Amino acid sequence: MEVASAPPMPVERPKDGKRSNRCRNICAAVSAVTVIVALVILILALTVFKAKKPVITVNSVNLKDLDVSFDMARMSALLNMTVDADLSVRNPNRVGFKYTNSTALLGYRGDPVGDAPIPAGRISADSTEEMKIVVTVMADRLLSNRRAFSDVMGGVLPFTTYAKISGKVSILSVFKIHVTSAVSCDINVFISNRTIDDHQCKYETKL
Image (cartoon, rainbow, N blue to C red; front, top):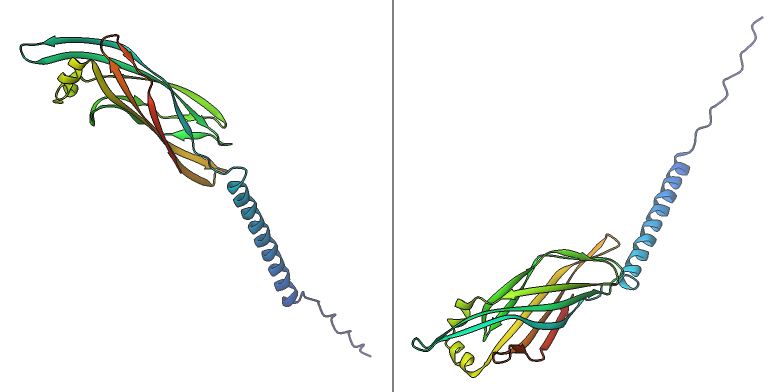
């Protein structure tokens, strides 16, 4: 007598609906975490780590060297002059400030008559860096100006110094903000006693 075999037990399989819900929940959680992290970074960038303008200050401008001689027959003057300036650049940010190569300029009545390189560098967070800039006047450029001889004879030479620092502040390695600080100073060089009067400076900073 044959005994009928029992039918096989059905194998339960996870429902596709439950799997889809689980995937959606994981995606939603990942998206929520991503949004929260992005918001936290944005809030920190706009508050605690908000980019601030670097501050460049001219501490002193000195006449390092001055030699003047006259050629009355030719109504001309020979002049050798070197000016040095002590600057300080303060980085008020909570992160470092990297600046690129730049040039300090010396002008005479609107004409460039000297320059000095400002090499690239980095200023640490909330720190100040001292800079010493030495500019030698290019005599040929100075004396090519028609008013140079009369100014030399009058005993006073008016000059303008200009320096600019440009670079970037990196906030949390995400936001890179360009910042610039510049300063220009008017100075008068007195030939008789080889001195410079008090410099009058104008400062400009921008993000």
